[in-house]
Amino acid sequence: MICFIPTKGRANTKTYKLFEQVNIKTYHFIEPQEYDQYDVPNKVNIQENDKGVSYVRNFMLNFAKENNHEWIIFCDDDVISFGIYNGKTIKKDAGIWFDILEKAKNLPFELVGINYTQHAWHEKKPYSVNSKFAEVCVLMNVKKINWQYNSNTKEDRDFQMQTIKNGYGVLRFNHYWFSCPNVGTNKGGLFNLYQSKKDVEWSKNITKAWHPFAKLVKKKERIDAKIDIKGYAKSLNKQIR
Image (cartoon, rainbow, N blue to C red; front, side):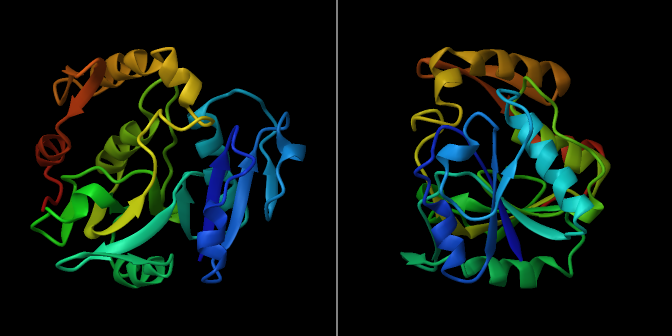
C-alpha cells in the first residue's frame, strides 16, 4: 500500500512519518516553486504552480494510473494522528489502514474513508455507505476511477458525488478516525483562500452543480454548502446504509 500526500506551504510536514513508521511508502506532490524547500521522501514535481487542489488531485490520480497502482491513500499534509473508538477513543498508528484495506478490497466501493476524531464516538453504526462524506485521508481504488476532480468548487465533496454517480460510491468506517486542524485554520494549504472567503464561491458552485441535493447554509460567520449525499444516492438507486 502507498500513500500520496499533496503539500503546499508546509515544508515542515510530518504526516509522512505516521505512514513510514508502519512501512507504508509515501510520495509528496509539490509545486515546482516549493520543490527545493522540502526535505521529505519521494518528491514528485507537479509541473505547475498555484493551480489549486483539483489540479494536484488529478495529477495524483494520473500518476497512480501511469505507475499501475491500485489502492492508494490520499492524505492531507497536516494529519496528526490516527485511532479507533471502541467504547473509548484510542490512539493507534497508521497501521489501521492495513485493517481498512483488508475490509475494503473485497468490496466494490471506489472510495473508502474514516471519521474525524471528534465525531467517531457518537456514531451508532460502524460504517456508512453513500450517506456520509469521507475526506482528508481516504483510500481509493484508482483503477476503478475514470472521473476527475472539478475545479473552483469543494473538490473532495464534488468528487464523492461523482463517485456515487459514476461508480458504487463511498464507504466510511465511522469508528476509525484521524486528527487534524480545522479546515482553513492551519497556515499553508488552503489557508489563504479561506481567509479571502474563496470558500463562499466554492459553496455556491457546488450548490449549483448538485441542485436540488445541495443548498447554501450559514454556519456562524461562514457560508457553506449542505449536501444531501444520502438523498442523491437514493435518487440513483444506489446502495445506502
